[in-house]
Amino acid sequence: MIPADPYTPSAGPDTAREPGTTTGPGTTTGPGTTAGPGTTAGPGTATGPAAAKESDTATGPDAVTGPDTVTPPGPTPARTLLRRTLLEQRGPLSLSTASSIVRQLALLAVPVCVQRALDEGIGNGDVAVTVRWALVVAALSLAHWAGLTGWAWWANLADARAGAALRTRLIRHVATLDRDDLGHGDLVMRTTRDTDLVRVWIHGVPTWAVIGTTFAVVLPALFSLDPVLLYVTLGAIPFLVAVNVAFPRRLSRALEELSGAHADRADAVEDLLSASAAVRGLGGEGVLVRRHHRHSAAVLAATMRAGRVSATWSALGPAVPRLAVVAGVGLGGLAVLEGRLTVGALTAFTMWMITITLAVRVSVDRLIDRRQALVAAGRITEVLAERPAVPGPAVPVALPPVGDLVATGVELPSRRMDLTVAPGEFVAVTGPVGSGKSTLLRLLCRAEDPRAGTVTYGGTDLRRAAPDDAARHLVLVPQRPVLVSGTIADNLRLGRDLDDADLREACHTAAVDLPLETEVGERGSALSGGQAQRLALARALLGRPPVLLLDDVTSALDTGTEALVVTRLRARHPGTAIVFAGHRPQVLQAADRVVDLAPAEVAHA
Image (cartoon, rainbow, N blue to C red; front, side, top):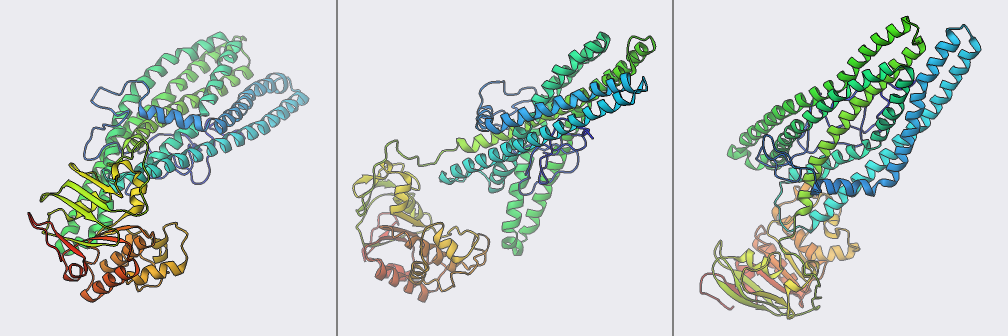
């Protein structure tokens, strides 16, 4: 049997189409489409990627900027990204397109065979002729199956590769950023859901060849049956154009509004899951739950608005050619009664018009896919447009293996200061809250650039060095370290080729007394604050950096453990310069020098 929907190949068991675009039975459009955290969509829901946070108006590429204003056509970043993605997959898409054309030609030839079987075989009582055309239909079915298989296989391959390439590009770019301007939930949605919407569009591109083939074959065929039938079909085209011009803008506005609601709820879910336990005793859990419910209600309201637009568009598009079928059957029936048309020809007309109806319906779906892909691509390009706060130089200068770390005239919240740290020197930095201890450490490793003054290492201005080079030489261990899910060993290695002996040595120095196979939980949730700090210190030691910048990393340790860590650190790494921001006595007593950031005071111990 020929499938009812001849325009969309099945895309495998993990395929899900972005909710809200109505498709017929058996219609799937792209494998692996999933929604980001906190996103749900009921039946008939039109959803689009989040385009803005805490706002109903998107501001990214291809965003709708007013009630009646849309971004004009042109080489916007979103369109450029879609074009680039399309060109990267031109190989499998070309094969998919060729297969889809073979499949559609086989499908469109079936009405001709049915017409001949009815008129020449069944109508004349000729069994041989009837069987002959039945065998031709069987052969066409095999060609249909082969074409459909190739179409689906290559389209799935193209969209899977496109999704993998986009995610890799996004993740690699995000890894270079040194600031957090996007909420974690929103960023997850851009990496998953938005990327999947682009995949759905890529998967549906060969469908346009199927639709074009349908009209190229069917319209001349209708004229050959009876010019009146062709005129009936052509008369429906102006109405189709009107429908497909009126609805895209309305859908874009609805999708942009829905996008912002989804992004806000994703961040609310992130906060609810990560912070609810911490604020439970303070009564804050209810606030987070109510915030989630408020954003969920906004998602539901926006979903219903977008769903109404999408459903209306999807219903009106196919309704026009169906009315043409009604007119054609009526006029064709009169032609049969007058002897100007055969029953087989009228049957062929009906079958072809059903095919055209499906073509129109699927073309609306593909246009909706493109709108969603444009919104998604705009959000992806917003992330790709982000640049590090401390960009690297065009021609970086390599830092020397060892050298003095010198800050000259750098501006801190409390004052401007100069600081020189020699190889192997232990300098403690203390001062009141807000005096700039953490700021100083970030300037010394070029996590940020000074507003005034310079920072050099071995005589080289850090702004002339590659950021990765500076990060290898000047390692910052923050007070609240970031850990990844996995074991102690996973967090220590982070992909580096290190044996267990190296790991145990670093753990001994940092007083990490847990087995290497211990699971740390999500973001280190299974460890205490002190254990997480010591693990981060051990991880930094494994790189054997010439300079360690420690931001109060013993604040969660008891005094005995803190003294042990400081003693082992100095004994095992005597050539490493250490700048330790803190205020606890054990650190200040162990330091070669103490720099007090209290205004106008520098003390030496």
